[in-house]
Length: 342
Image (cartoon, rainbow, N blue to C red; front, side):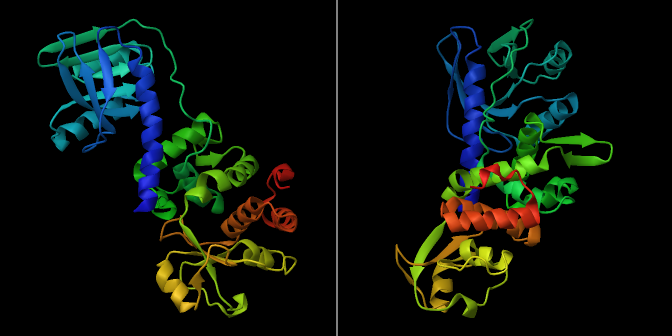
């Protein structure tokens, strides 16, 4: 539940930024105000202040580059959802043909160039002929959802061509986040869709960026707890879905080069039950740590993903010997751009 809430917040922030930028294109006295989030198939709720001083609310959707097929499906979606208000689409600049299609099919929209069509009882707006003006999408940093998506995609080259539903289950994210993630990757030109399916264009660079962003974007939002105790790490039996993190993982993947000083475990289990089983106790400065897994229950850790996760954890520690171990693991397993490791 916490993961889903974090992901929802990331998506909401991006969408609010896009909506606010497009609303600025509206002519006075029209003024929009984003309200509470969300209902049915919509991304949120919006209040438009009309020329007569009345406020009318809409449920809105955000789609950067909609095609005719998508517009048709989206209209069917909100029609079947039977939402209690009108629906409005925010999007990048629509071609004249798509603007006409929206008008003919009563699809309310405002695009990034300031073109708009809104037809509701008591109000009609039709603005056309505005030139294309791309919305500045918030693609500077990866979101938590994109980080989760990339983790499973980078673990096995076959996964990028799985269905969205299969990828969502592996990554522990929503179907919508899978789509938004691929849009982000396409915007960055990190993957392309060809005749033989999807493929990464610069995989080594993606390893590098994922490792760079791990500590501040993903790890910072993961639930964890520090613990104290006396059990040797060699005596700990990992449970299904668990894996070592940090020093112990580095020790394993470096053939014993790194001697574990802290004992970290990624676990999908209840922290309370797990620390009691291990005879540990909460302690802010403890040398043991339980970390909540961020991937989906369907995901199976393999050597590739284990190496990627371990390198990111070791680099995040900012410890010289751990970083040296991360370099060794990278050279053996990933071959990522190593300039960022150290």
